[in-house]
Image 1 (cartoon, rainbow, N blue to C red):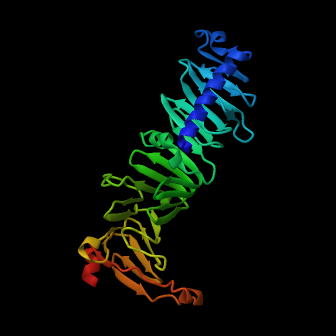
Image 2 (cartoon, helix red, strand yellow; image 1 turned 180 degrees about the vertical axis):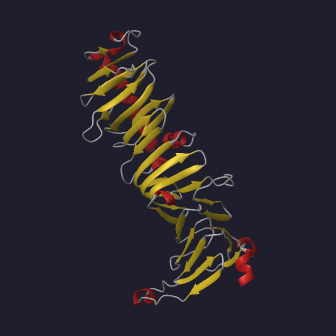
Image 3 (cartoon, rainbow, N blue to C red; image 1 turned 90 degrees about the horizontal axis):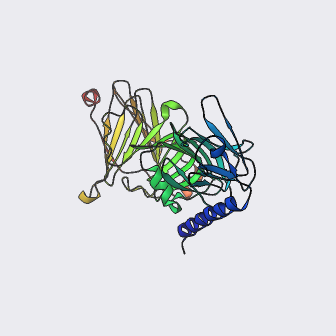
Length: 347
């Protein structure tokens, strides 16, 4: 039996146990107390209050607490750090906010008619207006939680935090925060390895959208990167920049363990790299220049800087002895052209 099936079975067992416990222990019928239908909002190990706007806050005050919202059962919940674990509901008993941590095993929870499986130890923050934020334990492989990945891809704005989070076969959140959006993943902070492209975000002007492979990016006004089977596109916004290091086994650039190459684009510049293996040719790079932009290719220490008024080339940096011994000093073969009329005029 694979791990996914075990998680699902465990989750079902937890729900059934929760239902049995609700019937077996002293039940607090909050719904009846507040004028709702009997058994519409009940549980044990919980307390509640209602604010002036009619928002009902249910707090989980013991480890094995259970809450049943018209058959939607929440259990296996503990507080986030020193906070109280809670769920807030409106006067229609719809969840408006939640803040809790998954206790033992997989947690299964339903928000807005969407059911998700959440790894053990995950901190869950739900807001009906903003979506779901998941602070996931380090080293989690989300490929084992297909239900969660399907939920994240349904257009519901969601944020993931964590380190060494494997999202797909060729996509790892090394450390930081990702927002899942309709057009891709927005890296808000930290670093990722996406299809052997390593890049970081350190401030708001460097937020990078990892766009869906066939997304139309013509009207997108921020930093973005997109890769298909044939092309890699990197585009900076007018006030932003992107630094990408190309790792070994890059499908577009055909890199190996000895290659060392990166590109930096800023202030509106961009590049398109096309794989030409089918033609028996090295990759082709189209530099897309802008009025104030700059693009710098660093190929094993040899830097090519493209600006509006021309190209400058800096000589290779001196190689360290250990790199020479290990033969780790190979450049990445590529052909570069620019669409900047000023660069072509001056060169």
